[in-house]
Structures are given as C-alpha cells and as structure tokens.
Amino acid sequence: MGLIRLRIKEFAEERGWTLKEVADRSDVNYKTIVSYVRRDRMAMIDYTALLKLARAFEIPIEDLVEVLEE
Image 1 (cartoon, rainbow, N blue to C red):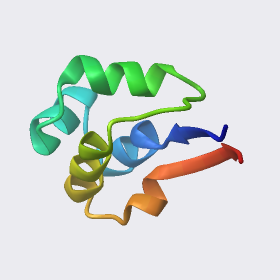
Image 2 (image 1 turned 90 degrees about the vertical axis):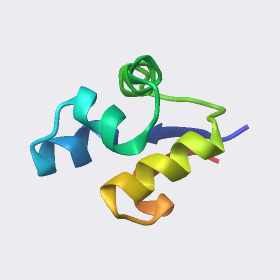
Image 3 (image 1 turned 120 degrees about the vertical axis):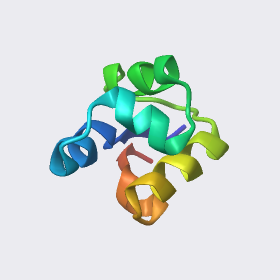
C-alpha cells in the first residue's frame, strides 16, 4: 500500500495563511486539516477534501501530495 504526505503546511506558509484560514478558504473542517498536517504519512485520504484544498491553494492535486512509498 502506498503512503503519502500532504504539503498543506508548506503551501499555507508560502501564502502567509494560518490553518484556520486554510479551513475557511477550502471549506474543509479545521480539525481535519490539523489531523492531516500532524500525520507524517497516510495511507488513505478523503478525495473531496484533497480536491477542495488544491482548489483553495490554486494548485494541481499532484503538487499537494507527496508520495512517500508506492
């Protein structure tokens, strides 16, 4: 099973956004975002949340996801 890490914190810092601002801009629950940021590797993720986050950052999904293991 592949493992990934989301680069939410990196993109938020580039834009000067707090995680709360990311939640507000993406319409993804704040606790969900904090959970994603705290995990250094994940096997599963909600695709809808991923899409909303990518749209909020105005980036392709591929840029938001870092593949750790395939």
